[in-house]
Image (cartoon, rainbow, N blue to C red; front, side, top):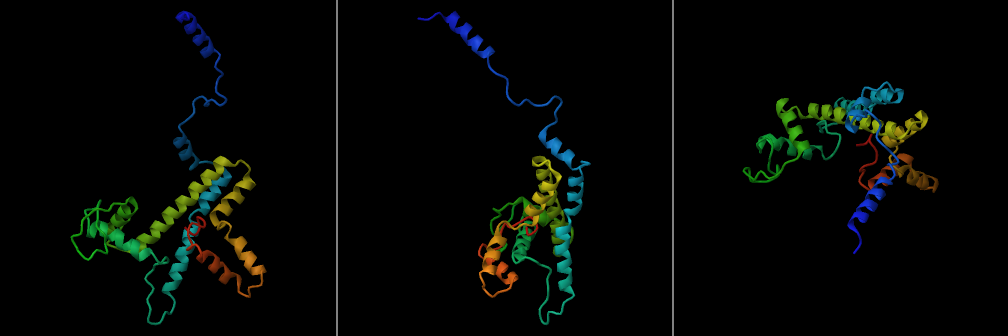
Amino acid sequence: MKNPSKLHRKRKESVGRLKPPLVSPPENSSPILLNDIKLLFSKDSFLRNAFFLSPIPSLLFLAVSLTWFARDLGPNVYLGYLQADQPTYTAIARSVIQRGNGLFYSNPFDYVWEAPRVLSNFGYILLGWLFYISGYRTIVIWEIWRIFWGALSMGLFAIIVAKLISNNRIRWWSFLVGAFGAGIAWLFVMDRLLGGSGKQWLDIYREVEGEYSWWCLNLFRQ
């Protein structure tokens, strides 16, 4: 049997020869989350301008919505919903208070009023409480919701771009393509347009995006 003392000595020597890590944390470094928060107050020109532009997409949709109130729709009435699923989301958010206890709620489409309160979702809970506090001014809350979360999403995306890319010009290209680029849908639009379909480009664009239900195209659309 080998001498245990020699094994112990060899083990200590091998530990002593371990190489230091290739990347070591800088001295006096702040936690990652704290650094990200500091970026919100950065003097970086890209971030400052990107934060300034972040609410604009949401405000554009607000402007479009307001124009519909001034249009002559005949016997129809514009309710203020730009997205077809918003009435469903509104019903779910209202059920947080009207059919729930503020935290758990039942299915708003259940024909039994006292249906079990087995549902809970942070987004609907927050939206439901905002509806309740505002006196159920749902359209106003929806627009505030759109502007706040839309601007926050764009701002956070700008922080990601700033952390990953140092070149200012490439930063702007990356930010704009990610925010408004719609993935590769435009390639298919150009293919059909150059293929001589005889349709207008906007009609082709609607066909292409309709094939995957207009989902997850870019931050602007979301």
